[in-house]
Image 1 (cartoon, rainbow, N blue to C red):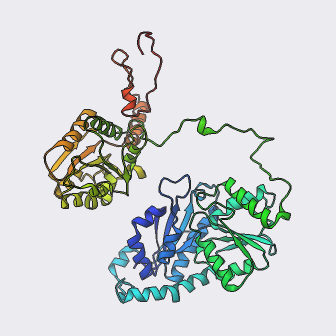
Image 2 (spheres, one colour; image 1 turned 45 degrees about the vertical axis):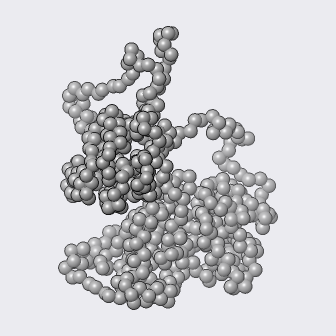
Image 3 (cartoon, rainbow, N blue to C red; image 1 turned 60 degrees about the vertical axis):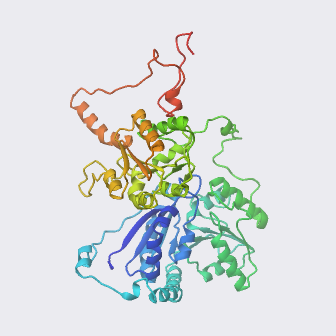
Length: 561
């Protein structure tokens, strides 16, 4: 609807595609006129903060073309340009995937001049367009599916082939070859370099077929690459092995005798790290081309004989993720632990956000986490009239405004859920970087803030509501939880626990303090410690809150433990 204006959105791996799946499926069905690019950060492997899934499946399901560029800046920049043009050539939205390792490269690229679009959003509003055939309703939706296969797919394949989006490196001849996702290129070349079969600049003795477009695949390109080769290794990170299966089908239909291997030499799941890639490619070459391998593997990272280090698991204590120093959410869960000591264990439903660190030591609270804003929604499964004990569920202010107001609070009111809901309000969407939201208390020049969560909850029909405006008051928080869990009143009990995110507060206050100091003003910074005359030595200050600021010292008094 904005053509010729192009549009792009950024998602975090499968979380973004899952949240936007309804919109994306409709977009992919109706198709696009102007270029539409979805930039997906593929959060796969040990560096991930979410569940392990691949965006590839979503691209296949909705017929969205998927680019996976080689991890260097000129290739990534080119992929953006290619992605928009591929989208317009095939009337299909395009995903551009950047991996964890891709996002850590350094380098430079030559920028092109900006071009002012010939049309603005205001122009699009002034001259609206409509095409009933693009609206996803029967019978158009059926025609869309036929159009995907008969028109859009061939257009995409032709564009990828003619623009040479995929690349081939190395010799035209060879008994073996390696096919890889574009994002795997650096690690493959590094492994070949350590095996003595490539140099720093990517000149390789083993032919490489690099898929900068991993979906759709181009049959004749792949079959031409396999010509004359005894075996080809597919380097595809993650499971299921969609690309390997597709290539195997191509070879079978073409009646080719080339042996296709992949997961036999590489792990089925998990990130393909440098060592994993070295072991897998080495295993493949030893099996199918041992004549290429030198006598020993070069390991440039190792000096001399190297030094074997002890197993770090046995030496270094585990450091699970946890709350920041001074985090106002920490005392909320200290109060929850204290209430559980009084009233016994409760089913606790957690949610996505900073407060999810409560499931880790030292709190170890929370039995489930189902999605952003869905903590209380998942706890609705425990809404039983025979229950003698109420469930507790948590949702952050970011998740609350995302969908918790309807799916969690609204449904709890509608279904007369008798559980306790704690809304952890730190004034921002803190876990994603401290962005302002509806209930943020800061003034925002371009957004409307200062809309209280309490008012929204009342508007949904909640009758039992408590607001704690300073979560550091553990006793007050504890009392509110106790009351919510023991009151005779039925229906959802909602506690809004509010205190500002300490990181955002420091971002606000530090520049002001620095400015005051430079101006010669007197600044007093409070320091906290333990009063040894009062301390009983039971370490409750650390046990209850897991406070990372405190450490135990040996007391001077020999009569005290």
